[in-house]
Length: 355
Image 1 (cartoon, helix red, strand yellow):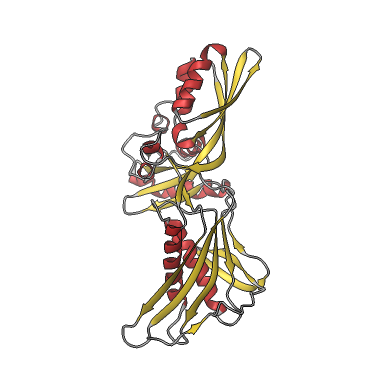
Image 2: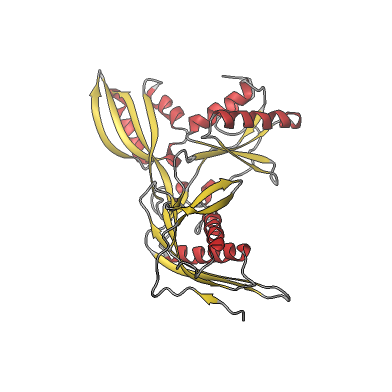
């Protein structure tokens, strides 16, 4: 059993310093000279993604160049490559946003694409405070590994995202290990605790722990922090959250009943209705997962005489299994899948045969 220096939480003087995180290829570089907590923000968080790939192997180099150009022009576009299944995941802010991206790749870069079904990006969060500890010990001959971390997780206001706070006693916990603790927490957050969705809107407080003079290192503290985070998150009443959109539909009077009925079927909640120059403007909120393909549906219902706008407003808890809409908006519906040939929301526009 390695000797340790324990962080005594009694008679504690809180550190006057906090950490500033500087992102660098998925890692963080930390300094101890900034009187501010380490935070991330939710601005420009993608809401929806689609799997795409070039139809011809000869277009792969051009495909990568097009993605690079588009992401430089529009920072809200996020790209992730999955080499095992030979597909690229493109994330954006709306179904129309993804369709424009795919259309540009066809018309500007002359790339024929296979496009999968668009899928909503869900997130996870916690609903109550919880504490846990993670202890990582390995002794396999020679120098071992040791790290001990105690964390407290606290829910934050929606949209406030992640905050890390260091409350360790000055000198009792080496400062060079605090940054790896923060990094280990953020890596665990990416994997979620319920269904693999990224976790958001929480505060992680490092308040205690211990280390070994010889066996402690950054890797051990990353692992211990991840263990503590997962255990605390399980205790903190985790929940899956889905993006909810504010919807406005302007329609002739004849179609008001059909529009309202369809919105209710999509788990929408009608918030108001007003008369506008011979038409009715209906306002509602509805989950994005239920609004995919809505533009085509509303054209069909109203013979093209209605128009609508939709924008993100907030996240709400997904209905539990068995509740209305739970299967469509729940856990398994959003895993990326390889795009079947000529399938998906924009396939008709991607083969050059129709506009």
